[in-house]
Length: 300
Image (cartoon, rainbow, N blue to C red; front, side, top):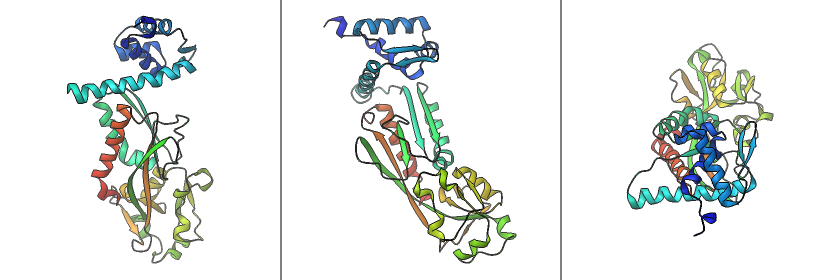
């Protein structure tokens, strides 16, 4: 086959790493070569394909439209190579590349962070970016490679699966309950300091819990994240709705109105159809699903 149509695989690997790191020196460190070798591989690849693959900017190397198309094809080749070695040759190749995961902060900080960090530590070639904030991630715009949300993935070029239903209840610290009027029914919360989300900063309707408890509840302290609410409740500042998987780790918290206030939500995992066959995406999705499945009692 004509060399012009048959670029070397090592040059494609260099291309993938530079596309992920954006800098020659960073790509060289990842590949254990000097930056001039990276530059030479990219120049050879561009010459073989007769296209410009990168825009050279002050802040780094960024893909051109032609580079974007090659990136998708090269990732598929990389994934196929991993499959061949794993399934046919019987060798366990290390995963490489970047994976950005968008997840609600409670799940991200309180459950996934430690587990994903340990997973990444066992895969030196893999870079995991965990974005733990309560918002919807647009996978079509590549805001994340994997997204965990509270809503079923929209139809289209998204592939999703249900992870688990999880329960939420009202919690307060023992110190708070010892110094405030008793709470026997939801109406008693009207005289308490209630902690919740900032409603106009929360685009996810599933995070608005208070109307399900009592129509007239108005929080006295609000935050944009679940982790801040957890810390406020732990500090004895008030009463708040917390996921059981977060509250269970803090013995100073007491469940309030356990028989009356029982909320349920669902975590869904989704990836874009263009990415779901990539080995690193599949393996990380399976890892997340397995970790949650093994801890099902904590969520339910």
